[in-house]
Amino acid sequence: MKATYASWVIGRSLARAGRTPQLKGHIQEILFKDQRNLRDLLNGCSTRLTRNPRAPTVDLVTQDAFGRVVKRFQIKDVVSRSGIDKLVRQSAQGKYRSARLVGSPETTRLFNAAAGKARISKRMISSGVSSNRTASLARRAGVGGASLTGAMMQAAKRGGAFGAVLGGGVALCKGGLDLMRGKATAREVAASVARSGLQGGVGGATSTAAAVAVGSTAAALASVVGLTGTTAVACTVAIPLAVAVGVGYVASTACGKIWDSMFA
View 1 (cartoon, helix red, strand yellow):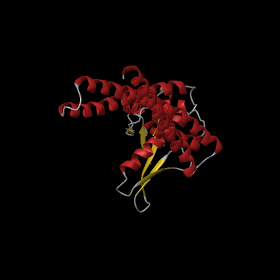
View 2: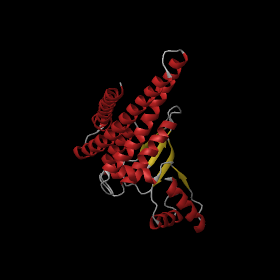
View 3: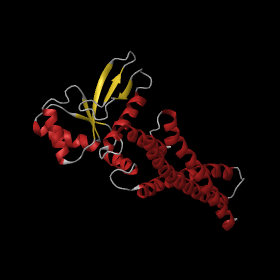
View 4: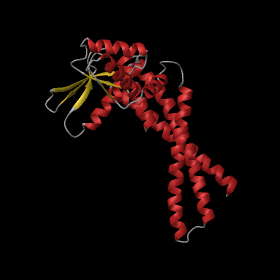
């Protein structure tokens, strides 16, 4: 699901800005917007992107339940010295006086330190979304170097580790109950935990890697074709999710059969 959501974010950022070298900044905007809307789910407020993807002073606005604008945000995701210096200079000139500056943790730390030295009052708040993450998603979209294989490998590692822990943990709980009830021996429980952990690891690794690969391809295709609305959601979310589930199931089942043929 995490890989599928990332593909959806990539698709929306490509639809908004195209394959711009600054795509990571647009990804940061979308991630922050989603965070805000999730946080405001019950209070009637909603945050939306401004119409102009290259708006100079306001990237996002938050409206209350009556449609009144209550907050304005300018999102930044830069870590270079020149980028930070430019941002401090623009802030000193009053460019962002009507908006709250929001940046990645790295950008926030660098900007606030530089702003303090420059003795300006403007401060930035952190989005909580690392520049490393937005750069990784941008690379998966084909911006900043081709690294889809690397992204798939990293996703496979995370998915495999999670799947192994989940599969083995469930088997351990069930096996523990069977052991106490006399329905299984310690050796049988250990074998079941090992089998389930291996199946979960293989299934998690293959399904997550598949979601990354298919999701990135689907996002790029949706951007090129110009898909919007439910069609774009189906392309960038539903299709990768369906493929991931299918691939994970097949790989996990095959792994179980191999285990049984070797140890049964």
